[in-house]
Structures are given as C-alpha cells and as structure tokens.
Image (tube, rainbow, N blue to C red; front, side, top):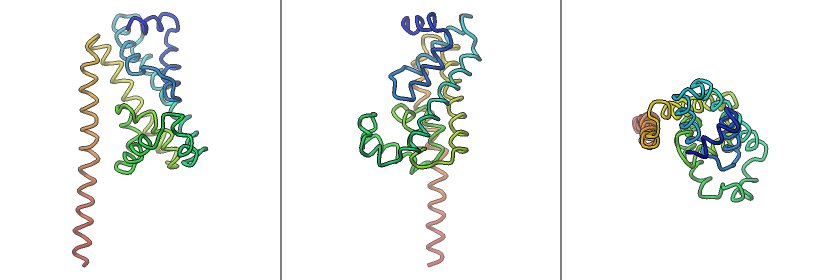
Length: 199
C-alpha cells in the first residue's frame, strides 16, 4: 500500500489513467488495488472521488479498446501461433472462448470483475468481430461499474476493502450466471419442447 501511495505522490491522478491503460496491454499493474487506494486517499481528502472514477474509466476503456482493434486486425491465426508469448496460450484462449460462447457479448461487461478474463476480452471481441458499437457500450458500462465499485470500496471501507472485494467478485460471477444462464436454459428448453411438438 505504501508503494502505491508513493506512486500517487509522484504521479498524481495520472497513475490511474496510465496504469489502467497499460494494464490492459499486458503490463503487470494492480489496477483494482490502485483504484481502491485512490478511494482511501479520496476519503482522506487528498484526491477527488469522482475524478478517480472518471480517470479509471477512461484509462480502462482506452486500453481495452486498443486490444479490440489489435484482435480485429491480427485475427485468430496470429494468436494461435504467437498467443503464448502474450500469456494467451490454448488453455486461456479456450476459457475466454467458452465464456463468449455461453454468454455472448455480455461477457465484455461482466469480465471486468473476473480475474484472468478481463484482460483478454478486448482481443477476443476483435477476433470474433463483435460490432464496435456493442463492444464500446458494454466496455464503458463494465469499466464504469468496475471503477466505481473499487474506488467506493476504498472510500467507504478503507483498509478492509480486500475482504469486501473478494466477496463482491463471487457475487458478480453468481449474478452473471443467474441473469444470463437461467434465461438461456429457459430458451433452450422452450425450443426443445417446440421441436418435440412439431415432431
């Protein structure tokens, strides 16, 4: 925590924008932790709460949008051949593809709360040629939610934010499965029954 506070003392708000921007381009950066600590500093009056959220959203959205265009430009063959160099080996690609296959473009929104998934959704959105309008809609919504949650956790819960964040991640994954998975099962069952009636 002291190191992150040192970053804020040296770089100010820009550590939020640039750090989160570079995080989505595979630079190791503790984005969630930095946002939460910015919330703690905002509570202490050293930073502005809304500015922290805004710069977090801008940095995150900018970074993931660049990965979208990289994925769209290079396509699947490139990542199949060189993906391991970018931490996108077959296992991780398979996991992200599975999420997209099950939940569609809504994955972009919820992926911000899922460790190991959020850094790759931009690339896969581009590879799968998700419409940019849909991509940016879910990206801004997801980035805003992710930033608001983490900055607010630091602002309202201080040093206990990690315990709350761990529970929050589990809740978001469960909620995602509930909101998307249950209706999907309902639609599949309805179609299955419809086919049986036709037979």
